[in-house]
Image (cartoon, rainbow, N blue to C red; front, side, top):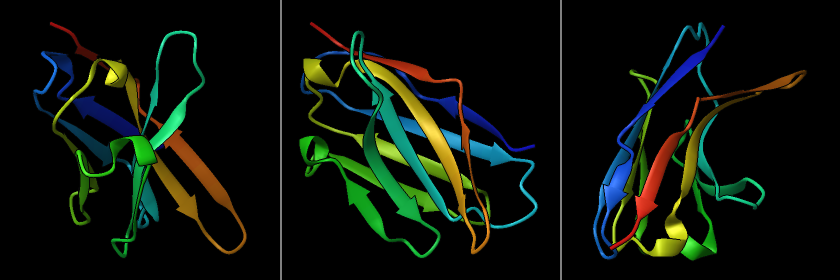
Length: 119
C-alpha cells in the first residue's frame, strides 16, 4: 500500500511563498506521475500541477509562472514551490501518485495540507 505524506502548508500573506513536499512510501515499482491538486471550500478538486517520471510537466493556467513542480525520483518525492501567492490560492492541497501501466491504473492520495493566503 502506497502512503503519501505531505508537509509545508500554512498561512502566508499575499505575495509570499510556500514550498510543499510529498513523500511516497511503500511503492515497489516506479510511480508514473506525481502531482498536486487543490480544493477550495465549496469547489471541486482541481489540478494544480503534475510531473511524470520522465519530467513531463503540466500546470493549471491559474498557476503558470508562479508555481514550480519538481520531483526526486529515487526518493519518490514531489515538491511544489509556490511564489506570488494570491488569496484565491487558498485551499487544501492534495498530493497524488499515479500508476499508468498498460493493463492497469491506480491513484493514491495524501491527507491534504491547508494553504491559506491572507493578510
